[in-house]
Length: 153
Ligand SMILES: [Zn+2]
Image 1: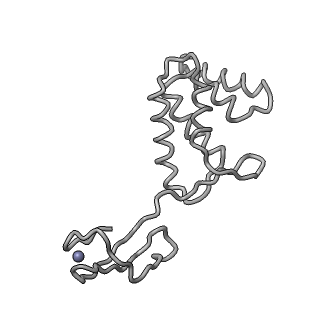
Image 2: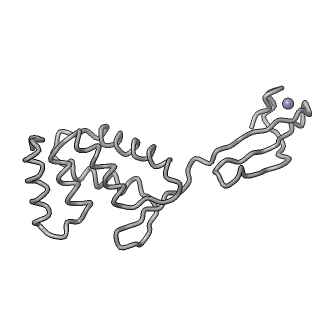
Image 3: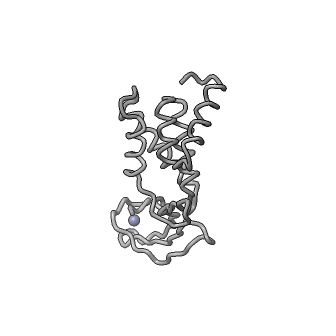
């Protein structure tokens, strides 16, 4: 942390305090060179997101795993890696508003919402990979419903 008064690169922390129960930390600092005091507010960005699976078990959010699932759904489809990367980055951004946990169902829906706009076949594939249809009938039902709504698959 640089001193805002003299630009000195090292400052000393006098006091560290959490702001209520938020992820914001308030620090009182002093500069050893100019002796001025100032306060900083730091936000903890990378709060670990936990994904709650359908069986109730929890696992840490794994960006690469999510990406692999989307790549699989998009295989041989006209969807570029850049577009897939954009989806993942976009979801990561959205995840910032979830404090700690998200269900795998919600996470799956975040992907589906984005794939639907991009590629209908990839959308259906991801739906089948991610939601683990209980039966093939469920899968067919979704496809029929999509055909009826004329999304053009
Ligand atoms: Zn200073």
